Length: 268
Image (cartoon, rainbow, N blue to C red; front, side, top):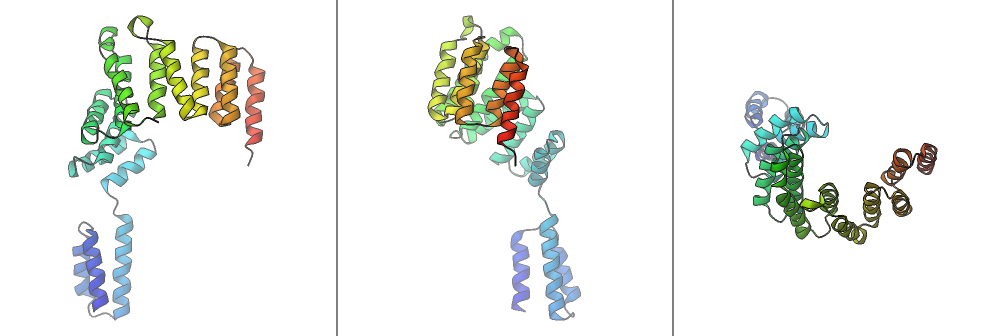
């Protein structure tokens, strides 16, 4: 009797929606059955219901990882109604909006996250990124008015987390793409590349290579990408140099040999 009661208490405390009452009814139907059969049936039902009772959040997350963003959205929205302060749910809603290019919606959710948890650098980074994408798709006058907020968001991410790599990459790209008359500057881009070099040498040399490539200093870019390969040896490092050879230096054969080298080194 005590074991049976403990099982029912466990089910109740798990708060399985609707299932406790279902099992409670089963209790009366099975009370005259042999004890072992009763316990086996209860345990089977408990395990089955625990396995199949996915929450809205879990359903949304599964679809999100499958890149089915529009299908994931309603599940996250339902989870949000259940708890409007759940940081992970809010972040997923922002991410879904970002992936589907609904910039205003994404900005709304990331703004909410900044208020709820101002100590999380990624929220400022994502907020700045969506502002940047919105500016890119806006007219020039509106975009110019957003530049200071975009910069401030990335800078805040670095202030909150001094080792934030992505915010530095974003600032590098921002200073490369902006016309000099509104703040574009290779010097400022190099400043953040140098900071990357101290935190992550691979990122630092990739960033320096990217800057050199942007300004069509291809031999300099080649040297920086080669250093990134020697330190990291990742597919990204090889791909960056191969793309430079193929698309900028008109050396497709060299690009092919380089990628074959990577493949040979990483054969399983």
